[in-house]
Length: 298
Image (tube, rainbow, N blue to C red):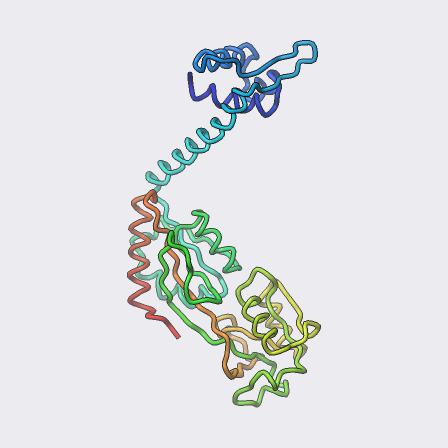
């Protein structure tokens, strides 16, 4: 029995056609028949039944069992290939959010020059999406935002590197622009703009809005932080954001909030054992560097 026999059998079981299976692998139909015969001899049983008049193929009970096993075996083989490729890889991957990366990357990258030729940066606008990429082992190290200070995932190593208060942001002409500090009771009649679902800021803001009985009809949503900032600058809406999302704009004013909700920034490291040697070195260097530089930035 050969590994290719299982591959051919999987396709045959799914297509139920010798012709389609042969065409999928650019081989002759007799080659598929010979492969099937090897499997049946190896397991000492019939794996399929054929109705030559209708050219239909059906799995026997033994065939169904082998098909399920073939799926598991081929998936494990594929994962093993990927793990070996990872071990040999000379690339290192680092994920970050463009909206907050401008604050953290200039402090990190100059100290990671040994990895310059290997470094591949992965950008994502949403912290939720970036977290999923790290959790799903697609990005082995990333800076992400969160509405909670800790991630309950033992497969990941977390370092909290920043804790920021959300502030109210308004145009200079807004009635609240002159206030030294505002509380929820002062914004009941204010229209807000926030990032759309899938963004950490949206989740934090909606929780705060619900707790403080802000009407849903007064909330607008956008997928772009620049659109949000433009709406705030126009005076049409107010926004609630951390300061890292507002850069080099004189047409938006920050007003502190009483009891503001928090936004947390963390470095997440994939701690699995089958990373490449280069990625492991990078992750370790990144973790130690972040630990020494940020010390829970505020």
